[in-house]
Length: 132
Picture 1 (tube, helix red, strand yellow):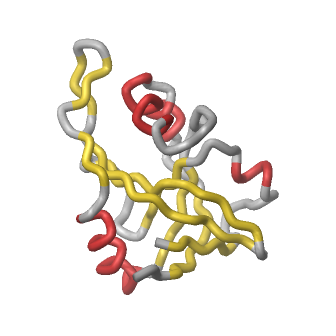
Picture 2: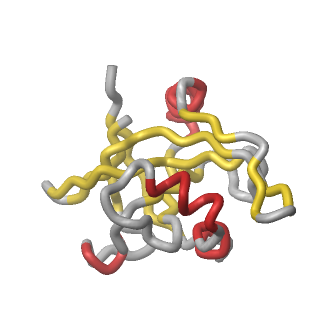
Picture 3: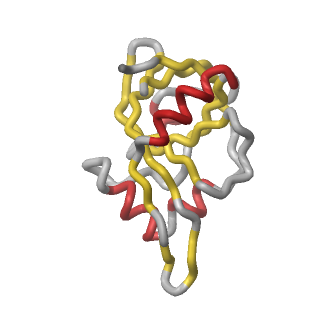
């Protein structure tokens, strides 16, 4: 069963670009796209009432554990496939849940092989929908 969840675009903490630049993560996300992943994440704030459904989706996601960047241990992640929607346009993406995060509970981090903010001309507070 799929669910359509609406949220507002939010600025991130500035860490998505740092983590996406690490080969250990970019190699994982490369598996989901035909092009290299964009070096950053898109943050979508959703209503907490949707958290249960989102949590359930991540429970059946792809888990990546015991990750290393060279000799340094980095954070484990869970990845699920999603479709991002805006004004009749859609894009295959993935949502990532770092098992260690500073984001609040209602923030979904989205990874794509596109610079979505630029291609879709979207900014903070714009409404987007994700299909899980």
